Image (cartoon, rainbow, N blue to C red):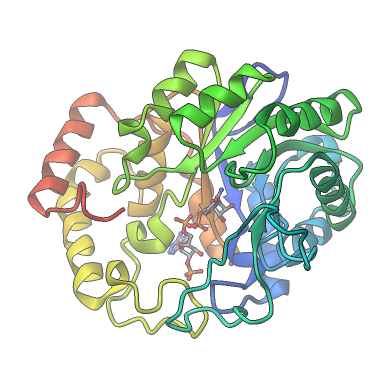
Length: 345
Ligand SMILES: NC(=O)c1ccc[n+]([C@@H]2O[C@H](COP(=O)([O-])OP(=O)(O)OC[C@H]3O[C@@H](n4cnc5c(N)ncnc54)[C@H](OP(=O)(O)O)[C@@H]3O)[C@@H](O)[C@H]2O)c1
């Protein structure tokens, strides 16, 4: 496992992080909490030190699971990354505040559309309350990396949002500051008002948006660590997704064209075509997809989602390989042949 520095901080974390979105159950068709706890413990035992969670993942459930799983471990051996600025429990909101942002769609893919309206709100007192709630759920007195989950809130100035996180850093409640789901101009604006340590964005073999919109370049220029989310494309890049898999009600993949039988088969065929290159690195398909992300930037981290010990253990073994430039070009040629490079985002 490689361990890398986070931004300009003194924090070092495993290049492979454990993503705990699915542990919240919401949008993933439920979750077995006991299994999820074991997945966290298995990850830690396998050398992972970075755990990424968020209040919105299951409306507190993911953070609570992580909090239970790390009980009894040395706190300073774990780098906890959580998020703020996405809420569900402040309604009714004052008029004009934030932006209602329901993740659920009209096709009934999620079960909780009626129960929870999710919105973005970065007002300083709301951010503070969010961080306090996370501390309580995680049962800790500091969070290593605090990231604004969605930076777009037109009612709060960036200087106020960033200033609040910088204040909390000075108070010792957080150690590093991050943002997520940003455009390049938002990234630049956040860098103006404080020290940005992390940007967390979607990035994978099949989703190269951050290469096109300048975010990855911005991280390199400004010494900001890059946390890649959904690096396995929600399981699609593991090569283990069965085209016949029936996703549970409430699973975000249910009904999505990307997870149709035809598309899963196509991606699996492309992964098979890449396997000759991959085997040279002695990695499974999912491990290779994660190693690919880590090879693009020496301050990148890859957040591999898992809710079972088996997946967690497999993903933890992604962190040692470096994929060569030549092999990356060959992989792109294969993905282009399958028409997968630009049409899966
Ligand atoms: N900042 C943001 O807005 C944002 C957005 C999305 C994600 N994230 C973060 O990034 C993390 C990772 O992203 P993600 O959870 O969307 O997806 P991901 O890592 O691309 O895929 C995770 C899913 O892939 C399957 N999987 C994982 N390891 C596997 C293995 N070894 N073999 C076979 N299947 C495997 C599992 O699906 P099954 O359990 O169904 O088998 C797992 O739930 C999240 O957990 C979260 O921490 C952040």
